Length: 443
Image 1 (tube, helix red, strand yellow):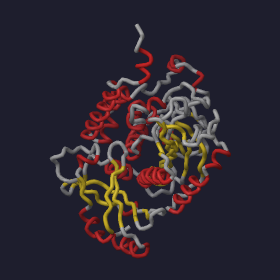
Image 2 (tube, helix red, strand yellow; image 1 turned 180 degrees about the vertical axis):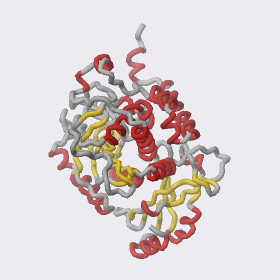
Image 3 (tube, helix red, strand yellow; image 1 turned 90 degrees about the vertical axis):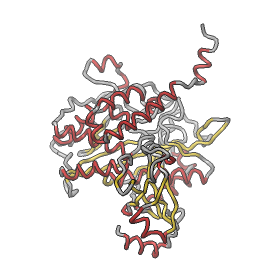
Image 4 (cartoon, helix red, strand yellow; image 1 turned 135 degrees about the vertical axis):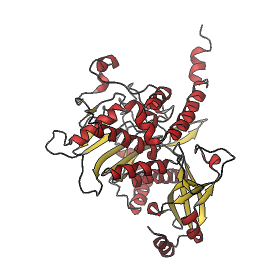
């Protein structure tokens, strides 16, 4: 969308403000509200931020301003506040692209992919809880939603139709093509699915979707959380990525081969091979928090399953494997969780998949059984590895992975490891209630 087209839209829609937004390392959105009259200035010069104050962006308090330059192709008028238009931006410092900007990192990777004749299409499926705060903690907000197996519960869904239908209506007004929304496997947990699109557009959508879902929840006095594992006994929040790789013009799905039993081409199997090879390092990006690894366990929840694969496997329509093939020409990575920064996650996934294609990495035999009925030792005997058990272990794998390091940039990887190791250290040095209860009078 050109500046002239944006100006025309401002007049047509009565837009009074732009919400110029970007995300930092942890996927947290930052923004400034600027009057629409400043369009010419922000289009050329951007909006200034003190980078050190805006999260982990590779700046100290002494550094020059970070300038967020809007990408108006991402513009959405907010249907619940129509005088405001949200727009994603890329970060610059002293007129140059800032290498610590997650959206810029993905943009750079997508250009490289496009130059090689590829185009990645992605569909993201966020899961979230609606909770209320109680006695210093959180509880599922709906006290009647207490079933041990609440997934797809019609009665629980019907009690929340006001929230769900408003959410779907807004997303469809934005042109996202929502095709389903359901009550998920945990109490007061939901999932919304919209149409797939090009990788950058889909990452922008997920970023805006989180803002939208949280805003609607707050209007009801609730908190919407995408935290990977907010309750120890309930299923966690995943964000499954459905992916297909097309030619640069978008006319041919290069992962599709209908003569194959899975409907996958050689490119698809090689892409899979790359994801499996780099799976342990990818975990540090797609499961990026201490809490993420409390979701990635085989121990069953109240409903009977975690739905979060821990074994580095692929198979057909099998939700216990790390990579599912739900339909011909499409793969689903099931270990991405609600805390993942979509721009970084897609960058890392693409790097791993392309490594698989370029080096023709075979993924090995598919796994069609229930992985949770096997022990780690039994699966290792079949050549199947397990994902890292915690964030620290995943960071060690990421540090040693040259392919992902090159894709994200050596400077960015250094900052990422520094920030995430500090997060691990803070967690490791925190004394929890569990420890006090277990050890206070022991010995």
